[in-house]
Length: 632
Image 1 (cartoon, rainbow, N blue to C red):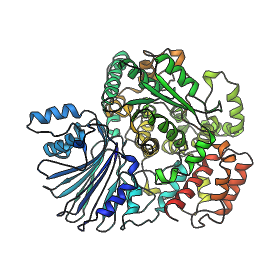
Image 2 (image 1 turned 180 degrees about the horizontal axis):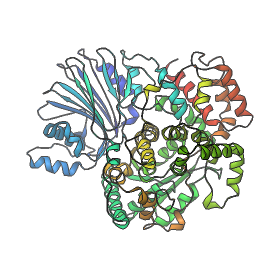
Image 3 (image 1 turned 90 degrees about the vertical axis):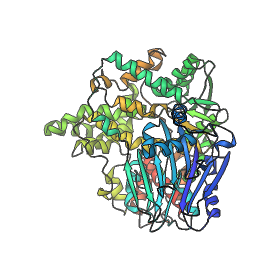
Image 4 (image 1 turned 90 degrees about the horizontal axis):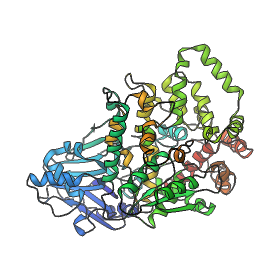
């Protein structure tokens, strides 16, 4: 895992290149390199975190032996050894043991179609001198970030936006039309960013730029929707479970290819427990597992993770977050995340990454399980209530029924339920469901259930209008079932722009490579074609994943309500973080072109009087802190 940058300028600008590299040097502290092509004006820069081939032969930018092709690469192509053998049979000679060289010669042999052969996570750029073009590519799931900026005769790309700030041609103009999406979801959806003319290259896409005239074309080479639209697998349940286990086993096996130590993030949930279990069985020695805990039992999953670790016999390390940890990290979030980013679980993710980095350089994370195996509670609730939309009477009854109970009363009822029936974060889920059931369509229902802040609140608090034409990923996908549609959208949207952004920046902040075995594209391609009545069975999410897990761990050890990676946000914002809230949400520093200050004052009053709207407060705080860091 590394950092890459590049731009086109006929004037040799190595100082600019070095400055762009330096600001993201934590992505690759082991080595750095630059390249300038005098004819095209292409500049490449690379920060290296050494994982494969620790020798100087793995240095980047990497040139082909004929020097007609140059590459900078971030990520891993896990099946590079088999591809190397294939290329050697075609006459290619290698000077390194790295996957970088394999990618470059794969491109030379098969052109852009080479990406269809890759299993892995990757963002790379290739200068093709033969065709006089620059190609940038992002992996199918979007594990590796890749941004580009274009304005007149300017083009630059980078693993992180912050490098653009070091280029004199970059203009820091806010993309205000996209800002309301941040306050709704906690992130700005791809391909947009907080800046005008600056974009995320979407997952499963590549961009080809003609160097002579700066014209470029973006091509989608992979789309999860295509697999949901294919014919369903006709195998029986036992055969499907066997297939899934084989794919998982191979996905984890490939991600153990490393010349440095590897560990596992273990939360105690189904996904991470399965990854740890399969890995523990495969390894001839104890594996390293890491988890984060909280003193507040409502949020603490560390005890459960410890039981799993003891059963598997891992070298387990746990750390209970202290308030000082959180306070020190909050002010660093704008630097590492570049854009306003609202997922507060970034804090514990950064802590567990730091914990793991003390022992390993690579850590397996289990993201992607909910989107592939049907794990989010919103899926089940919305699936049950979809028939309400065709019956006005039923919809009215449910809406009125929901108005009877407040979020606080629902939480009280939840506390009285048996442990197996309890829901975590019930107030937030109930509030989202109240919004969802009032929607005008199934697609809007899902959008509202995925929103952290009510659109009506956003309209009241912002002077910036949302551009509805800007973003259309909530639209219906063919004629597929609602459950599958929700999973497909989350795979391309929430997982990509929230979860994977969170994990990439958190791990990279401490120079740790995060690997995602459940995001092996073969898993989602298979699961998308599994019949829904097997995927979601007996009213159980992750039904198939559970069946595989039960082969490794006792059922009673792992069956528990889903929790997620949550923090006591409301408590912290009213406590240790209150000075930051008062400072950054003060009328004197709020931009009146963006915020309706009277409404922000009302929000603060409601919050400090006990209403649990900490997420809304947190989003405003994150925006204000980002603005101070990168604009003021």
